[in-house]
Every structure is written in structure tokens, then in C-alpha cells.
Length: 133
Image (cartoon, rainbow, N blue to C red; front, side, top):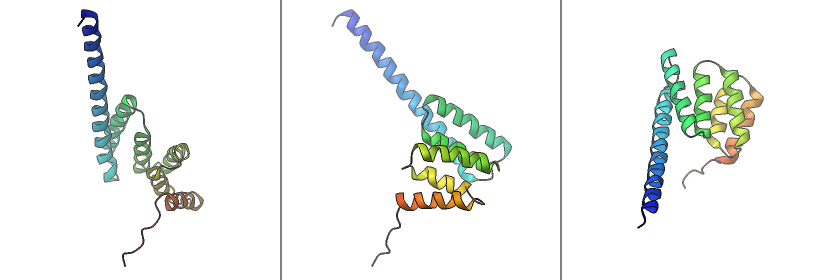
């Protein structure tokens, strides 16, 4: 095999390995933030740590999971209005994203119209399962 081709294949292999490593790091950061946010009622230190993890995960691979977690974190911090705005943005950008609509519904407590909007979308995307006979 010519030396140039060997070098090109080596560089390509390194780029692919780096891409996978970044994906793994993003998944780990997202999972860690999800654990913190999933606890609810986070402390200031936990919120700051989750925010740093989400910034890292969003930089490495910006996807809607990170945005939904950010919205849930805002809700845990007691910033319901900001959480509703962030989560509605995700839900409208991805209208078939049931997780975004569920999170938006959680943030919509106290806003009947927003809650009913979320409920309608969740009901459409995740219809009730009939009871076994």
C-alpha cells in the first residue's frame, strides 16, 4: 500500500476514534445531568454541576435531550416561567417529542391552558393502553 494512502487511513482512523470518544463523553455528561435533575429539588451546587454537564454535553453534541434536561433543571430551580419557555421551544421544534411535551406539562402547573396543550399532545403521542382482558 502506498505511504500516502497509509497515512490517510491512519488520519481517518484517528478522526473516527475521536468522534466516537466525543459521543461517549456527551452520553456520560447527559446521563450524569439526568441523574441530578431526576432527583428534583436540587441544591445550588447540584444545579451548577448539572448546568456544567449540560453545557459540555450540548457543546459536544447539541441535541434536544440536553434542551429538555435544561428545562427540567430550570423547573427544579424554581424558574417555572423560564422552564415553560425553554420546553415549549423544544416541543414546538419537535412536535413528536413526547418527553418534551411531558416536561412542558410538568412546568405548566398553574397555567391551565399550557397544561391542557401539553396533555393533548401527550395523549396523541402516547395513547392510553387498554386494560388486559
